Length: 135
Image (cartoon, rainbow, N blue to C red; front, top):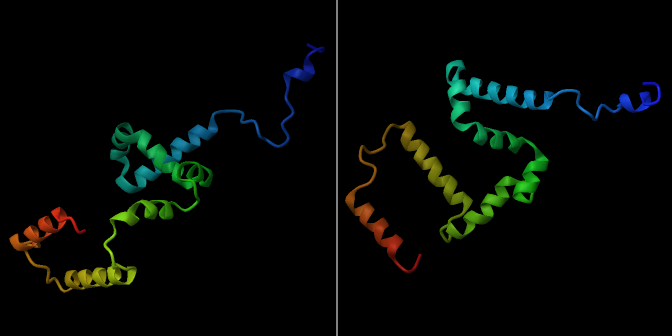
């Protein structure tokens, strides 16, 4: 014992070596808490059983190092914007988009949305536009 006493006990003044698996326990406790806040106590077990892995991946989005590794940048929005750019309509600016959103909100607040949002002519026009070679 006395010969190897120095090797038996590690000096850990910076507390870099965890004594237990507390990090995993904290992670799952935080997951449970977030699900319980959104859905209530009864649904928590069912949701975690169905989508535990997906929830764990979602929790990692808070970790800047994880985001940098997965997306290559600290800004997730710019990464997604890069892939959405080819699908944008030419001439559609943020100002026009916000104008359309405001018009839609105004229609909803006035409760003046039509019962049937899309008529046959609108659907045919959209289908023709989608299948045309000049998009």
